Image (cartoon, rainbow, N blue to C red):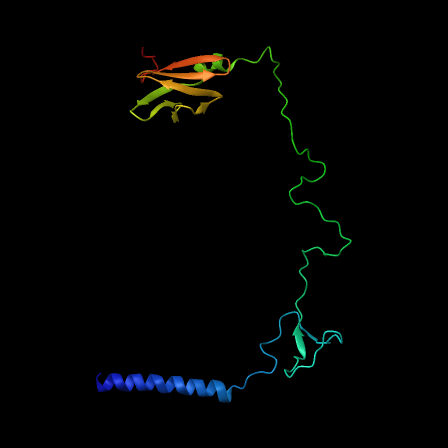
Length: 178
């Protein structure tokens, strides 16, 4: 180690020692700790039943922190409600009303071919899928309530609750290939 480095090292040690001495001897520890909190302080009034004779001095002041204004009181007579229960006036299980009658409702398989378009197929050793309306669908997945059951080179077969629908691959002009 060079002489200049030794001087720098000893200077830093001396500054640290002086700072420690000033902290311990000049800046005396405060009796009450840090400055009081924004709410103020209250004098301690020890309860006679909980006070025990100890050799440690009892602090004379306790910080007063105001109770948050947004929190309700936790009195025993206050009513509590289940947090996971819907508030009164809200139906917990809303039911959907069907405006169409059963006779007028079209079957899923009847409208499936008009609504959906097959634009690609994937046939591999371990995976089969179809590109329906720009979304990849694997065998077994549902599209509008119909399950993709089989994929061939140009066709995708969907099984609906009321029958089977086959979508054929369309070219760029929309003409269906056979």
